Amino acid sequence: MSPARALLQCFPVAGRTLERREPDRPALCAPPAAAGGGHHGGGADEPADHEGAQTSRVMFSVHGTILGVPTVCTLGDLLLDVVVKLNRPLAEGDDTHGETRAGAGGQAANVAAWAAALGAEARFLGKRGADAAGDLVEADLVRRAVDVLGPPPVGRNGVVVSLVEQDGSRTMVSDRGVAPELSPDEIEADWFENADWLHLSGYSLMAEPIGSAAERAVELAREAGARISVDLSSVNLIRHFGRDQLAVRLERIRPDVVFGNEAEHEELPVAAELRVTKRGPRGASIDGRDLPPAPGEVVDTTGAGDALAAGYLVGGPELAMEAAARCISQLGTMP
Image (cartoon, rainbow, N blue to C red; front, side):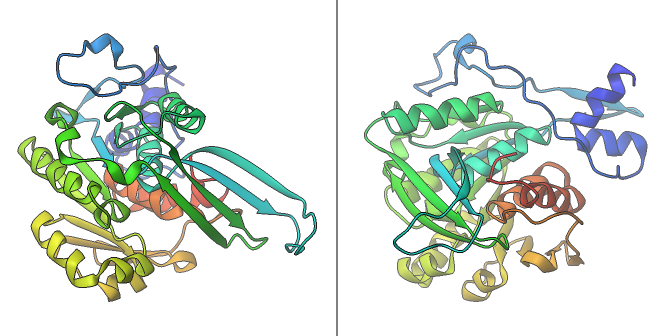
């Protein structure tokens, strides 16, 4: 295989355009090695050689057309994700054998990691804890070629525990730690330089001060020319926060794309150029088309919607379905 062909397989958007066809299943890129840790924010005057594993903005020329690698920014939570896959039904009051994974997680972090794996330049924006969990999850994202941006770590990092049943269904218990404390004055305009997308986790819109920080990020991202996508995240949280209150915030944000499952879209219809409906085992509705799920084994459904969102932002409907299938064929939320 030629070096050019190998490189294009790591960037599905450019590769498919060159070949004028869809590949059977695009390979995920191996992230470049980290170079001294992630970028912790702190202002525009921080030198570029401290930006760690930030990937280069590669350009391809195809039949005279310039194709750019998309830059996807995500804003939300960076949590320690502990996944427990049960090998048998849970034995109350006794031991139950299972398989476990621990690493970076949280909706926004998941989307950033999948975007990087699919060939995009990815940036996560958020607040992390100044503890062992915070150090671990930041290092995990940097290792995956995601630029980690935000104020200096403080306090206690959040943790989410996912209990995965034998059929792949999951139950989650979340502790967001310091993530919701991100404030508008901690958002830097330089984070959105050359950005194509700012993706907002719905969780970031339904708490304060992070909700106001998200709105400030939208202002700066639009000034930089980026489009905005939102994932509605949770029916229960929408009801707890207040549907009308969230609707007012989304009217101000004016997202270009809204992701959600059928229940979330029914609970809160949002005016947007495009609505993506995640239908679980029945696939998804994207761009007005009902797309079946890509074939594959179901090991763990956790994070499939985040992989789907990343795939859509990077390469459109087909890549969205392929990324979701990849996600559920393994244990955990990260690629």
